[in-house]
Structures are given as C-alpha cells and as structure tokens.
Picture 1: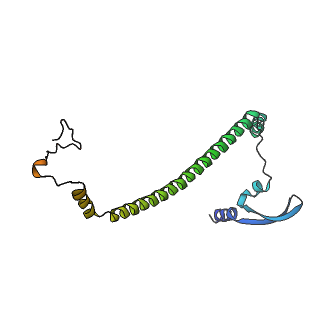
Picture 2: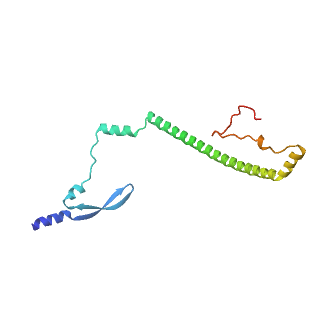
Picture 3: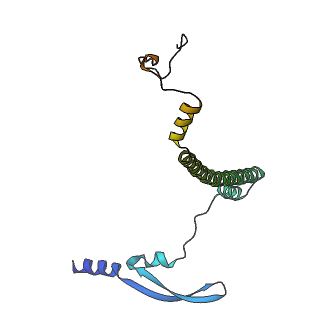
Length: 167
C-alpha cells in the first residue's frame, strides 16, 4: 500500500524544464511543465489531424469572395448609406420646423400683446356717458318701455330660428 501511495505521489508531481524556442528571428525561453506519467505524451510534438482534400477545398471556397457576395455587400452598403442620408434629411427638416414653430409662436404672442394693448387703449378712450348723451339728445333715442320688450324661452339649442318679424 505504501508502494501505491508513492506511485500516485510521483504521478501528480510537476516538474519544470527550460528550453529555448525560436519564434521568428528571436529565441525565447519557456518552461514546460510535465505532470506525472504523462511526460512522454507531452514531450512529443503534437500534430494536427489530417484534413481531407474535400474539407480543405470547402475552407478555401468559404474564404473566397465571389461576385454575387461582393454585389450583395455593395447593395447592402448602398442601402445603408441611403437610409442614413434620408434619416439625416428628416432630422434636419424636423429641426427646421421646430425653429419655425418657435418663431411663429413668438410672433403670435407679440400680436396678442399688441391686440390687447390696442383694445385697452380703445376701451379707455370711449366715454360711455358721452355716447349716451349724444344718442339721447342729438339722435333722439330713448330707452325701451316694458311693453316693447319681448322675451322668449330658451329651447336648449345654441341658436334661435325666427319665423316672423319682431314687432
């Protein structure tokens, strides 16, 4: 049993060896670690599995760009550029319309203020006592008497239809 313990301890031990490896024009040292009884398998150079001629031909064909693929990529690029240009035009038009809307809103506000100021000026310039005096004394107008006033009941609609002349 002691023998089995030493074997597993020996197999799990890591040993390191240094070796020089040539990469391009320079050499560098690297340490290779070998675990236990796998030392012989790791020290042998690993080979790539051989690839069949059919697989190699398919890989080369996949790496080549044929005319239809190039045409598809060109059409996709043109479509992408067209969409981007249209988007930029729409965004530009939207910005211009926002600026125009802001300008027109400011103009409307100015006109409302001017209109209110003119209305207040006119209303303050009219003297209602003077108007009543001119109407009664110069034009001969009088207030209506109670027998001249005719009232009507509201029917619920917002307009009234007149079927005969008012006396």
